[in-house]
Image (cartoon, rainbow over all chains, first blue to last red; front, top):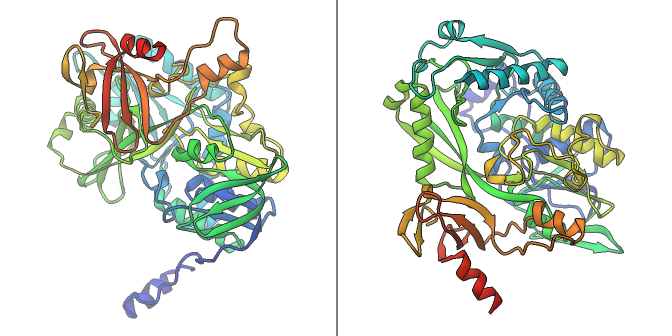
Length: 416
Length: 92
């Protein structure tokens, strides 16, 4: 399916009845060179880059629901590369650069909006920590700006600057960061992968992984057995369940993260604003709704819905930062299942099984990583070699003592 | 629902009073056990979908560690016992 101004007019005149699907609905072949389990953002981008950049075109993506029914359609659409640790920052900056060229690459409007992400600080100690983070970003060639209180007041006048416990003293700004339309990212990658010959097979749940002589030979699915040369797992919150089929023991715990959207308002929030007194973050979608979220619910969960106490806590944080939010009505709330890792950082690596590859542990930061995750995973699968920017994101880093723990919280997933 | 926990000492209490430590089914290795045993204990999780046992610390109540048995898919809570009682049952 191609789009143009002309096609919009033509289809409008014919009652919008003749739009074609953006990707095929193929029946699975008996064998693929690579099978990717999981048709979310990361699975689709992996398939796209495998076919386009690494010349591996006999690829299938298996999705148990409909395409984009998981976290790629459940996040708060934020893209940024303002990490501190040297194991993380080059990876996320690589992702940011891919975002900046994504629309041209896919020829698809993913509505990337580099409106800037600002993280607020509320104490001198927190300012010091953000100065340090900003410097760490500069060390990796990523621009960061410290915005002091008076300048911030001009930029974002509606914040609660004089709160007694959490006064707002300033913020760390990454101007290139922003938001992207999450569904369009899934659709764009799906269409791109499909055009390069990738079979995207929806409503096809993997029920078993068949192994012979220590290597994977294929997967049992609800649409029968499908053979493969290499198997790649990109199952996000269900990684432990899929990994179990191949006896993998993973450093993951699944948690639920909620997100919210309000009724549509006129343009009022120009940036992505992150509260420093909690974990609250907010932006305004192009439709006008305020999109926000905060912490995970705290207990491990596979339910794609959260509890009311956390919803209340999120709203309280929001109103503490922007008192005017109390007048806005929330339209919808939803939950996604996060594959929380033991250090809060992701895993892109080989496994103990030669032709089985693993992509998981995205915690609640997977959306921004979608392009780099797919690119690095495709690099690993095609060349059997880790991409340079993903070198720190190995599965055995815990055993070797090289955890990439941005929050410094230790192996306690509900604290990351 | 896991929003309300019936503490054996304090009665029905909201989830916010508790700090959740995680999986209670794993046994702590002996000090001189292998690095692999310790790695598995510290970093690897079974992460079940369904019935699970977890340590919940009632920080804003009796400050006892409890073992909550619940379902990670439905959020149903089956039982809550004191961790000492849980350990006693395991050794019996």
